[in-house]
Amino acid sequence: MSENAINLSIFDAFPMIKTHRLTLREILPEDAHAIYEMRSNGMVNRFIARPDMQTLEQSEALVKKTREAYAQKKGIGWAGVLRDAGDIIGTCGFNSLDFENLRAEIGGELSTRYWGREIALEAVEAIVSFGFEELGLHSIEAKVDPQNRGAIRLLEYLGFQKEAHFKDRIHFDGKFTDMAVYGCIRQ
Image 1 (tube, rainbow, N blue to C red):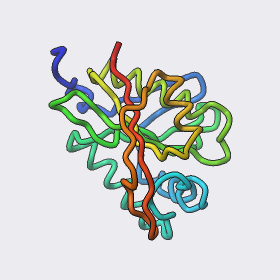
Image 2: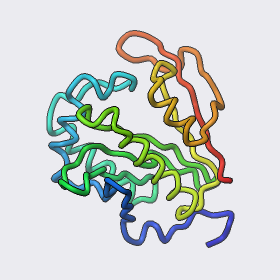
Image 3: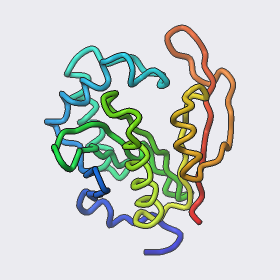
């Protein structure tokens, strides 16, 4: 792999990642129900400018879109599964890949039942490591609501630094909110 190119062999077969408590695997059509449960509960989207899911069909469409993004080499979306139980408890991944600049945007969500257990930290740490070591990224960014102190603490713990703060950047649900961008450069 060239030091100045994203490792395209990652797209030959979906990359599975294992951590102490998690298996990060391909999002499958049968995951739509669990994703719907997460995105319709009113809490997961609290700091994300998107409406709660109203129907299972919305979740099925999201699963299809995520799988297509991987097939088209535009993103990588993992389902976070507890290794002990096999239950999907969240999703995470690279929402977009900027091949020219060796940069990707990271994002994810976690079922509220697992908040406060450092599971998000475990997943994000694994994905960041994968991005730098396997995918060949130079930098990774996260767009976050400045009010989401939990996500910001997690990002800062992993070495992300604030790169930008956009005032009234997002218009959602009749109001404007700010957006911060945090970035991490490969060491």
